[in-house]
Image (cartoon, rainbow, N blue to C red; front, side, top):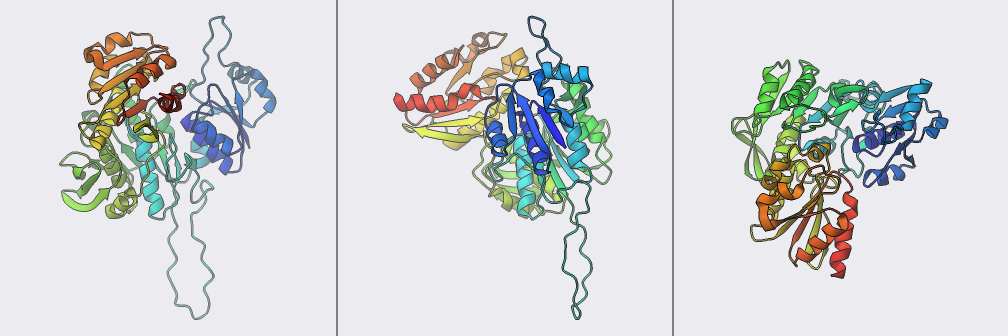
Length: 485
């Protein structure tokens, strides 16, 4: 079929586009304000990208429009629709669906789905789990909200590309005189997916993950986020319980044993096997530093992870991935060995360059807890004496609302200096960061932000840029400006 995707450059929709293209469908799409890495990946797949949402795209006459949750019925100041193509689709009665629903019907059907949910760490843990399965010979399909460096793409169909097809390994016909062997069992088709609690589309306000119907579900952590669509933490817990309700009795729920919110989710009802991780009394726990630790299963050492990743959050992500893979029969020792070769995900503490002995990193962190764990991870890596310059923009819908602005000084405690881009905020970033005193500066534009950071930077510094968007290309601009300084 020909599918036309509205909002194609989002990490989820871009991955869906790659899967559809690999499955043989014709794929086109539109978006506004595109930025790497997704735009680069789509162009590499020769997927036509159209800038904007003009109604003239109806002339493409696709078999179905797949609608991303960036699309709405919003109006501009003059009363015209913000997404005229969506209005035209509705007016003409053209067929449309959501991304999660299309994925469930055309890719996930008939597969063993492993879904990774949580406020933080979904992308990294999904990438870890996919790599563990790949390294252990399972050839999983996956859709990750980023680009795992081990794979170089954010999505693929994997073994058993046709949804619902029998996954039986082809064997040569038995010859006379051969010792008779029992038939091989069918090889399961596994699909690992990042399971987002954000809503599905403007016409389907359920969380995306209720469409996925996983057999293995990871609940990595749970705290308040997405203040634009959830009133409070209890509302998000309710959505997580909807996910738990979809896991079959033969399935497994892997849950962070350190999270009271997840205790409440499971207390509301769970009908599947549960395996916990993180706490000392959990089924899977860790002993040692995040970059080199023993994996304990019910208190007994079963594996060791040695890798370049830092931060307690990544240690917990690893335990979650190991516990999920064990549900498929992958021994923790095998999983740990695979993690030793894990290369992380683009925009997850990614080193973009070093100029004048100043290293510039890119990271996706945007929620205060994620900012804190990211800065803490870098602090553990570079040591207590090194200077960390945290450069960030509160860009997510939750942060733009100012719901968590009071947590920002806490999130930046381990940074030497902090620089905030305040463009587009409806609240006073200077007031929010006032408890940090002279350690924090605020800039209303990218140019001003660059001047502040370059003026403060010294040889040996580590500049950590954090945003869930393109951040105005600040990373390369910093490297260029530092080179000229």
